[in-house]
Image 1 (spheres, helix red, strand yellow):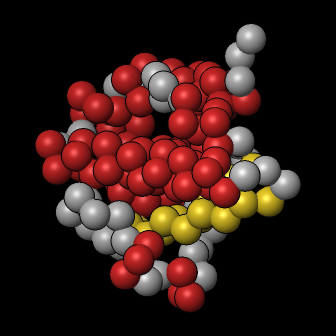
Image 2 (cartoon, one colour; image 1 turned 30 degrees about the vertical axis):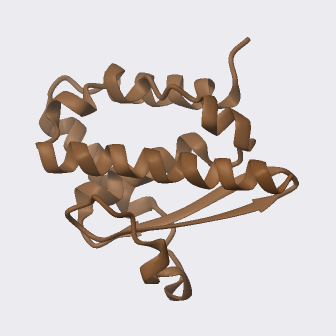
Length: 141
């Protein structure tokens, strides 16, 4: 049985498959970053900065009705697109589903292989931080 996370991943895989080359995919990634709702300045704190990212990335997590919502922002447009992908896939999911998510879409759309090593490390840090939040929320329940 596919989880909602897997369904959202599949949607992204299909969206990215419409583009024939990586320049178009980067443009789409930038577009997704621009569409990401701005993070309230009250959440742009040192505590919410993801360590391990070359650019500044802020990630805020909250829980409502047992589901985690993520909000994020970045000062770099490609990075903002990357965090937008992760927010879209992981938000409104249970802590356990987030912890268990394999996030295969990252490889399936070719993101890992087309990112610079520093951006790739940043991506890993983003995923790790989102899973840490999920673990913390799972322990509260």
